[in-house]
Amino acid sequence: MHEWINRNTKWIFTLPTLAFVVICIGYPLGYALYMSLHSWRMSLIEQPIYIGLANFVELFSEERTLNALGFTFKYFIIASIFEVTFGVILALMVSKIKKSERVNKNRISFPDGSYAYCNGVRLESNF
Image (cartoon, rainbow, N blue to C red; front, side):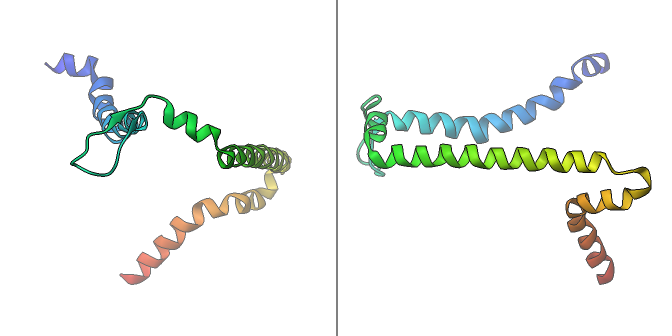
């Protein structure tokens, strides 16, 4: 038994996580896809009626949907360009910092750790 556990440790730790993901993400996603292929009202009396892809045809034939998709795509492109550009510039600036200037390097990553530090100080002062 001990040898079996050693050989299958990766599965023993992975399967509960996989089950959680399937239950919490896979089932709702699958059910939403199933219901998108039906015409239904939020009633327990009427059964959903299968209509196939008619909901999607109606969705993509509306001008509002196409405008929203166009705006989202433009926003995605512009935001990506800015984020990548400034990220690369910041990375180049940080990589040029000399070893004697590590304090400045830590200032850039300070917001990442500041929340945890402040909570630690706050909790310490309570006791």
